[in-house]
Amino acid sequence: MVSPVRRGYGATGGPWAEGLAVGPRGVRNCDGVGMLWLYATTDFYFLPDLGRAMHRAFTEAGGKAEFVETVISGYDGHGMFGSFTGTQRWCPIVEAYLRRQLGG
Image 1 (tube, rainbow, N blue to C red):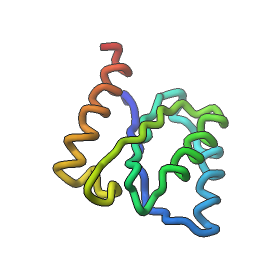
Image 2: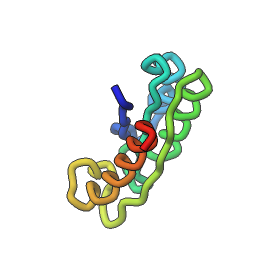
Image 3: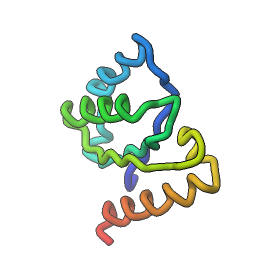
């Protein structure tokens, strides 16, 4: 495994969403394999503040992850992985991350 890439999932808020920031503390980190956590600032389902809180909890618990927040303009960024516009934005980020992981 080179490195997993994590994207934001749906969570618009409410009392249950706050628990998501605590949950990553219990997640194992693939035995030290780094992760890329990619979030859109315009994601209406999974707000970046929640993503940052989850990342902070994960790394404070010993997880190794890089958090990248990207701007996807013109629509809800939650669909960035399935859209042409989103692909143009996230592909270079993932490619650069994987090159760093492979030492190239």
